[in-house]
Image (cartoon, rainbow, N blue to C red):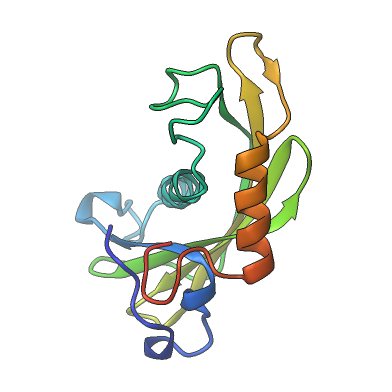
Amino acid sequence: MTDAPANNDHPGHPFGNLVHIRIPVAWGEMDAFGHVNNIVYFRYLESARIEFIRRCGWFAPEPGNAVEPPAGRYGVILHSVRARFRSPVKFPDHLVVSSRVALLESDRVTLAHDIWSEQQKRIVAEGEGVIVAYDYERACKSAIPDGIAARIRMLQASGNAGGPGSVC
C-alpha cells in the first residue's frame, strides 16, 4: 500500500478528503473469467477499514484500549459489510480504496468506501462496512471510547483524515 495520488490526478474523486490506501492488483487475484475475483474486493475494503481504525487511534495505547489487536479489552468487531461491483478490474492496475464516515453512533461507525481504478480512471466498486466497539473481556458490544469518538467526529466534521497527500 502506498499513498494515493493527488486529487487532481483523478478528476471526480476527492482523495484529499478521505482515508485512502493504494493497492496493486496481483495476478493471482484474477479468476477464470480474467478479472479480479469478487471476494478479493472484500479484502480491499478490509484493508481500508483497518487503516481507518488505525488512523483513528483505536489500536493506540490509551487507557482501556488495545495496543495491538486483540491484546486489550476494548476493540472492534465487524457487524456487516457489503459491496456493489460497477466494472471488472484486470491485472495490471492499482486501486485506491477510500473510507469516509457515513454514520457515527454511540457504539458503532458506518464507513462508506469507494474503489478507484487507476487504469480505468473511475470508481469500479462501492462498499459499506459497519464496525462496532467491542468489549472482548465481557464478550459484548460497548460504547466507542471517548477519545476515539472525538477523533472520529473531528475527522467527520473536517472531512479530512490526515491532510493533503497523506494516506490518511
